[in-house]
Image (tube, rainbow over all chains, first blue to last red; front, side):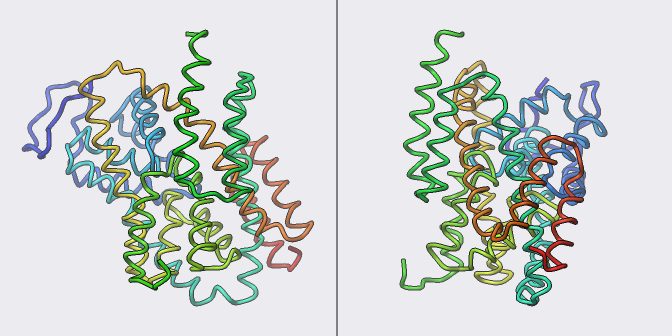
Length: 202
Length: 177
């Protein structure tokens, strides 16, 4: 099912023999990712799933989860990784770059404009107060996000995972150690702990 | 490092390295971005960092584009472009190669093991980000109340976050925060 499609180069748009909709052209990929990227605020994942699985049927729900899970465990912004991997899966590396560019270029232009406005007007007292209020709400959302993600650990009574969570929280949030140093120590420990604690269950 | 080198190369180097260490995505990298932008390089104040975090949450596009705002603050439009590409391209290239590698020899159990080992770490990182931002944003009882209320609402309901941003913005506008 992963249509071992065009390798490094994008082959001529040969007619695919598979029943699902034909792979999108490179420009379609660019436009589709541009659209989902500027569709809403608070993250692109929701819109990506809607467009790719529900509307265009480029992937099944399982294939989407599988591809996204890979991008979630790799470093870097998940949805950006996803655009690259997904585009490359359909259209080779050029497709990957098209999806990557579609995802990033339009919102980056918007963001640059906003940054210029902030640089100009950011010191105006009214704007400072409004942004201050919005920051408070945004932090609340982040806390909710953290709690949601931590719920499965709590439900599983995963003491080892919870310990790792707290140690990283303290090292980064309170002691303010550099990220790279913390992860270089924490990742190997966490992997070993995971292997040891899983041995019994699997 | 303090000899004031070309700001663009500092941006590229900083975010290029962060790109490959940003386990758990953009929100998990918030503490490191704050540490670098506010504490190390003094590109902005903690208040400005909390501001641009709010702006990045309000704007369309992936959350990682907070680096566009940081880049702009450092070196204008060129800085915005440099920071964004440096933060996104190395990780995307790495993801591309790993996905091709995994497509060839599937059935490896390592991705699953590493993934479940990384989950608690990225939650801890995001929690640290929330703490750091809260220390800047929540300077008054009302501010802390807004944070607490939106945390509870966002956790327990499916209310659109827009309404919480609106409420926070209005309270700020009214000078209550």
